[in-house]
Length: 495
Image (cartoon, rainbow, N blue to C red; front, side):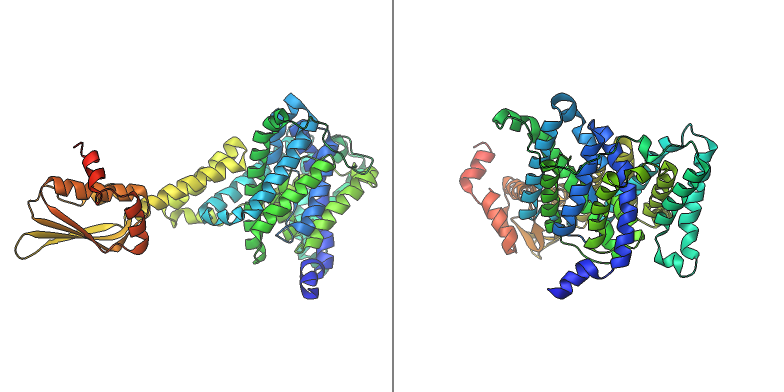
């Protein structure tokens, strides 16, 4: 118990606290921007980010991962807020949390095993592109000072770690933010700051129960939004968990993460915040800044609230150029540059899945659409590939009366047509033996193919014997097959 507590909370105190501060600074403009996207007051996103980060630090399944208000979730809220208002958004946030808790209890987090590496790579690359594209408005139609500050910020981020001793003790993104803020204030530069993003809250969040009628009409309004938010939130959180697992060479409890995300969203809804989920960009900032345990996530949430409520006078002076430099660093570090080199080495199907995932995510700005498209494509390629490994050989006995077909491989919807085409139904033999000792039947399409083969041979006057079905295949054939059921065969043949 003590060892687990130390490992999850106090094994990396300095690194976690400093990383949490960096993440908190980067969270503020994003939370405000996501609130604007959703059409709500900036405090809704800031309160949500504080609450979700703090709660997930205790109940989440992935130490060191950052959860808060996100753009992917904000995009799904726009119509609900526009048509029904903030109170219905808070109610939808609560229901989203309930769905996510149920997903964790049903162990749906295990579905991540169906997401292939090529989909994850495409997802990561698309996210890196989106993060970079999100910085372009801050670099468009601005004075040269902004470009100079951004370039200086990138130099600090990449060169400060080379400084002996100190470079390893203090996260370079934090040095970048503090240094550029000091320079901007000292020189009195007229550039965009955090204060220009929107008004910061000046009070702590309070308990709020959504002021909506508790009836079926309300449920019908928020249900589709809550389902969408729950799915997108869990999908992005699971993908983030996988990426952080790889970065830190550790494992996480995905079902606990599902439950934790649900609890955090319920807490956010009760404190006047909007639904959120794990943030890949901020999680990578946390990891690259030295954050590893739950303390870094807790620090990010607590320090975020302290800054927006107590240190708001200092906070509003942070130049956006400093945060843009940090996010560009995240974009560069997130993109899998190795995947470009691997295009020549990897199979075409793998490359297609990766590229299509990137294109769909970037085109729709919806991470869920891209991942679902990638998973679907990967599944189709896999089914087609496995279907090619099914083979049927045959031999005729010495008397020329019995033809034995030996089936090897997996028979399912993808290989069922090849299975049928492997038989010669016009050959005049007294008996046909279909040997399935080295085959496996997976679905009703495969069973239907076997029925079709047996019935066609019988139509040609051959006696058919099916042998060698393994137990699992025999179960599905006995249940759904008709070739050994005379009444069903007669009905099928129209007698």
